[in-house]
Image 1: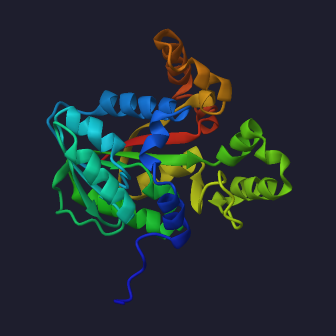
Image 2: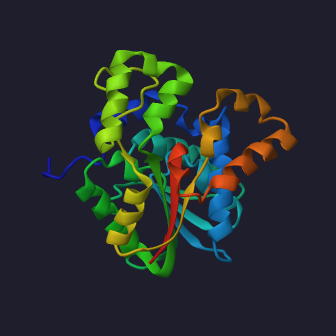
Length: 275
């Protein structure tokens, strides 16, 4: 051992290694709303390409895939070996591929100022200590070229409360205690490792996500609620295969995406910031 901290908390690693089909989450059920909204928000802000993009915590490569398909040069970095295996298999089957490397958001294996865009769709909620999140943001800023863009996702502070109501978990006293702690300090824990109760994580208040980015030296251009209330309404999933109905769902999220009083209702928050 060299004395360095592990790249990922063992609870988090075990959670994702059990979920062999993590790459499928965003193409099933309400996960599709998250995927499509993230895709449209990123494309809305990307400058003309092709661009060099670093996907930090990119898991099995679902976002790296479409970005590569759009013509960008994408490198994925993730701390879970299984994810790297999955991402490389995914990349091998694409006409326009991407690369995948094992790595830590707090110590990126990337040169200074070498990329135009950094995605952080995971690190900010799995680095539960603020010092680690700020280190990861400092690394993102280091590798970005001047004027480069950071797209960062956080989980809403209120996620367990709404998820518990939508799925009935809040009627379990044990889960209710978890949700109550989340509301107090954002430190989400699943001590009994119950399936569906997520892994060790930090849940951001929208204002806190913005302040962390500002504190790391970024200029925050926008902060969005990704899915809106549609992210919690289970019957919505029945409408997603109908193109017209899907557009209604997406428009419901767009309508309130920037409304400060409603951003926290969304399961996920997406910030767009520049170096």
